[in-house]
Amino acid sequence: MEHLHVKQLKEKRRNKIRENKVFHAVNYVLLALIILICILPFFNVLAKSLSTYGETVGIWPVDFTWFNYEYVFTTWPYFRAFFVSVGVTASGTVLSVAIMFAAAYALSKPDLPFRKGLMVFFIIVMLFSGGIVPNFFVVRMLGILNTPFALVLPSLVQVYNMILLKSYLEGVPKEIEESAVIDGAGNLQAMLYILLPIAVPSVASVALFTAVTYWNNYFSALIYLPNASQWWPLAMYILNYINTMPDVLGDQTLLLQKTYIEAAMIIVSIIPVLAVYPFVAKYFVKGVTVGSVKG
Amino acid sequence: MEQTPVKEQEALHSGAQAGEIRAESRTSGRMKDFSRKWKRRKTLLLFVLPAVILALIFNYMPMVGVLIAFKDNINFIRYSNPLEAFMNATWTVEHFQKIFSDPEILKYIGNTLIISVLKIVILFPLPVVLAIMITEVSSKWFSKLTQMAVFLPHFLSWVVIVGIFKSVLAIDGPVNQVLISMGLMDANSPTYWFGTDSLFRGLVVFLSGWKEIGYSSIVYVSAIMAIDPNLYEAAKLDGAGKFRQIWSITLPGILPTIIIMLIIRVGYLMDAGFDQVYAMISSVTRNSGEIIGTYVYRISLGENAGQYGLSTAVGLFNGIISLILILVTNWISKKTTHTGIF
Image (tube, rainbow over all chains, first blue to last red; front, side):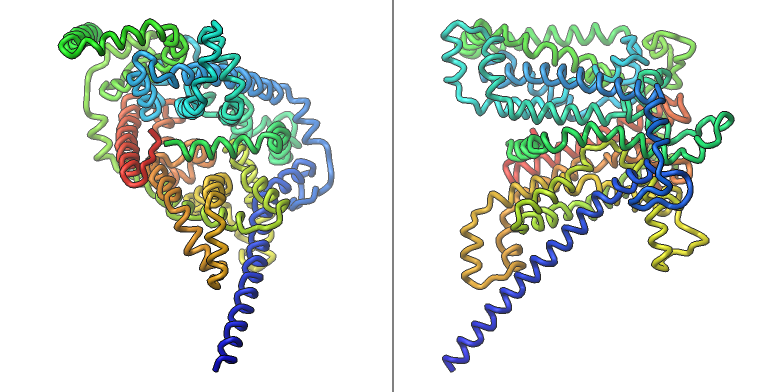
């Protein structure tokens, strides 16, 4: 009887170990599949960007050519759009983070006059928007319609980012700043030289969120720059290129190669993102985790 | 219209007076407290000033601008000054009546809800599953590789993602090629994925999942990491297998996170994703794909531009429902899990 019981137990244990082994094997296989689903589309577009019109491109170039890249690198409007995106992203990110950090610094002080009222003021911004048409007319009345300012200014206030920064600053021990204030530092100095260096991780993740938002944004160009294609950012330029037919009267190959050129445009546009991605990914992860535990 | 600012001023003024009276009638300690605060911290208000000014211009002015929704045919061409055009138009509530009677608008509201609900029902559980799978990986480099690969699509523009899939799912693209060679598709009538109305919603959900599942899983990965490892050790000693451990330890451990995420997600029900849908849609797929966001754009500034009043009314209607949803879901979140977004 006793003997049988031990045997059963051993059998059970073996089954468990086998179950775990099977579980891990299946898990690895499934994850490998998921990785493939995530990256194969990129390889297809990469291969296509190096191919000549003809047979279906898989993940290897067909009839290898540099033509698509030559075309992209010699198309001035594409480059202009690239530089507009760089400029808009850089200025938008710097301004937005600076303005949000300053506001977050002030709002993190419990004895700021009108603090509650100001918080309500900003939360309303987060909860309700006037919508496309009123936004459009405000931008028009300001005289910045069809100018690059309309790509930067309307989205500078990012309340969610401000709240993230504020809750980070609230977690910094008061004594650190107070000692500096006793030494005669004003608010501005305390913010710039004491708190900013401490808050680098959260400022970095907020800056990266903002930069990604600006880099990927085509909505602002769509509604605020209808008649200023010379100021279109890259995303808007590519969307427009995909959705319009090229002037075929001049060159037939442009029509045949169109989707291949699009592939090259897409690849060039994601290179900046891919270049910084491995270095900054950890800040994104941090930012998300900070956001999730915030009460 | 000209009277409104005056009224507002009056209201502000009387409000301020009332405030003063109330403050005086209470203990003077509060006043003293405030004046001390004011003396010490008034320069701090300068730090908030840029944000306040920008919000007033780009967020509060448009909120006043929703009054366009109550105006009939504002003529922006005849009057170059938008304010003048606004004041010369007649008041109406017609646009709001239209929202509830026009079958076209009702259809687009329906599309918005269907796409949004499909996204929640199909996509919401997947990041949880993925997070569990990622945390079960014991090899460090494989775990890193997986995370890098699945987070990446989140950082790309919808324009780029739609561009990528227009290539992958092209009528003569690699996916169709594979399906044909496997005998799953007729070579003579390959599927045009982006140009078939009945496939559009499925495609929207699929692409949304491809872009966001990985990134959404981060929050669950960190929640799982926070679970006490001793619990798993104890379960192992008791003879619990992997599935039992996931069911009895991991899932209960991250349940609060799941609930918060679900509540926040439901709050954004009315937002089916303008950036995504606009980049994907064409006139062929409008029937099942047009959502409130793209419709509001199309009839005001897009293809069928000019119906500013109706567009603003539909946007306002959508905004109010969203606001109520967010407030309610946030309230529920605070009641049940003691966390909310504000």
